[in-house]
Length: 344
Image (cartoon, rainbow, N blue to C red; front, side, top):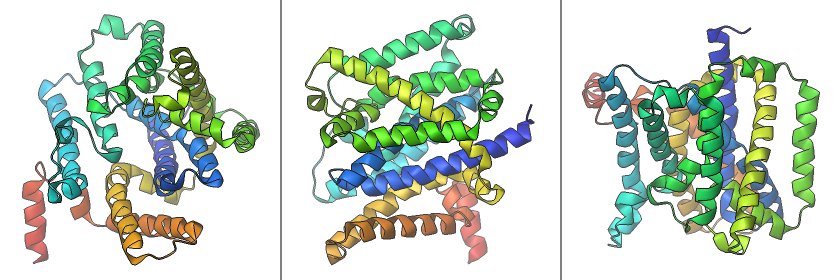
């Protein structure tokens, strides 16, 4: 059995792989009508966020200190609000005011709000109920399927994705209490590689219409119910299918990520920085490329350039403490001002 230190190092490697896929997925998502992009996005989206949510659940614990719990929630909420503002700037400038500013997390910020809900859920649910693992997992799966299938499209308070991905959060939470990660890592890498290749091959041979439907379901939010013909039964079947595929692919990726080099694992310690900043970088770079009207005829070069530039910038800012502190500018205000004074 691996030690805690080794296991944490393993999770750092896993998180690094996932954050790279998150960045790549967001870079190419704009032109998902392109067949190659559609295949790659569908493959990535099936497992990358479910696995991130699993990891979040794995490292979540009930806090006996209520003040410490409230502080952790405040820090997440602080990051959410502070980074919501840059995404709202175009609407602020054009005076397109909306109540959604207060109710809908912009772009990738939905994850922070969902994480807040999940942690509140774990903190306040009675232990007697939380300890009934099978019951809780069954209820979470039922909620994931039903709520996302029958509710109207929308991202208000991130409620759909919160329920849709709740089973993965609970799986992660319960996995900490078992030896499941070690058992997964003992699987034959050739087998897990073949499973992922087989799933990718199936996606490649699927018609674009079906892949669009799969992508909608793999989004784990009912953003475009029309793609599923408004059929609740079909919606529910697609949600079940996505949960199963996401779970299978997650097991395979966990198994293969034990081979991530030690040097790359170090970057997995700060995936929150990568996650928060890459969205703003992508937003700015896309705007710049559009304004300069470059690489419009060569989208592949455009994607590659954006991906490489963003990853380089993320590696660079990861070296500077100020960018880590700015993720929570209010909580870290004194430390930020002290750091700026020392630099001057």
